[in-house]
Image (cartoon, rainbow, N blue to C red; front, side, top):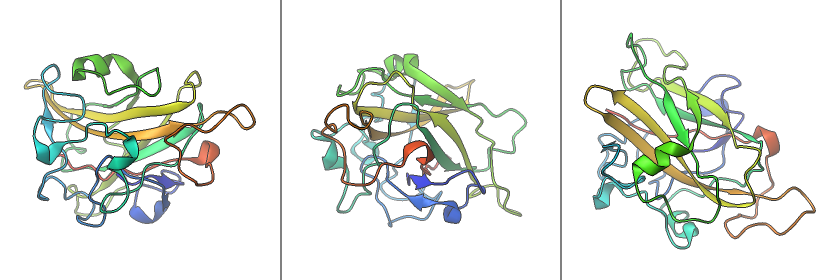
Length: 224
């Protein structure tokens, strides 16, 4: 997952913005966009709604659970944590079509985010599904001729204006097949900062300039 500034304004291609962060333990630079369904270890995975933890399928290879401290999931061999944002900022995320965006009946992407900062991940995926802040059309894509696998798609959402300063989980989640409850998911952390002059920056903040309402990110998710 790569967070970019300017994503969505001129399409969802990799050159549409500047990267400002990645998902938890994302192997940045090790796999091209859209190939994480075949990359070893596989980073994106099928989940059942009520059984699995929100950010894991219970296997080491697909573990996006929260670190303690959260910064341990970023840097070094992993991508950096997303730049801090303020409540009300807009963020954007991209994903590869993986041959599904052209289907006649494609379902929406769910963006889930708890309402209280600095908390462990919810105990179950069912709990987190009660915390949806946005739904995005999965088939919002930048057309690439003769390519429906790695075609970049994406969408934007707003950080709710009522979010207090602190560190939050945000989850991307998509239902491929309603008949067999086949979901795919990815998790990341973001720091919501206080308005200027109203208090200290929370513990998860990184020393970068705030992007304000232009904050966005692209996600290198892979569904198969």
